[in-house]
Length: 226
Image (cartoon, rainbow, N blue to C red; front, side):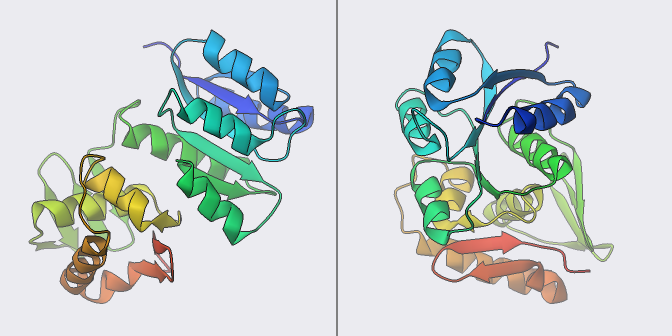
């Protein structure tokens, strides 16, 4: 299988090299761009880019502009990098269809883990058959969930929702994003269906239900605090 291509866009060459080195160690092929305009050229001149890592603050075109341009033509996964820790930026990112939002400074290892999680989710790389998070174990092939070693009966959507949470540990997920990812883009129902399913899922997880944290005004985050 050919190495998956990842486009890294940042005006700091040192940052690009740092990210590139960690991605190359994981056998990804890395393309680079030093500003927004170059990023657009590289993206549309290159076939089969699997994911874009995009800095917000850049000359010529900022990350938001680049994201808007790419989203006109592609649903390629996008991770935004920013020096700002601003909730408004994060919400804007979700509105533009950003898959992940990471504030600088960040751990390159965490970034690579996020890249792999997103690519597993989009089936660009083979998903793991068994997922583990704290006291939860999910066997995707058998469609079985164990909590503290004991099987728990979940509906199909509850299983899909829990799997999505576990595959995206530590990531703030908007209700709209959960709806689009678990119920798919062709679902036109109310986002409140998420809250209903989360409530049922928490109940079935028992004490482990507190792994699912509520982010007021936005959505949820799955986090194992043990």
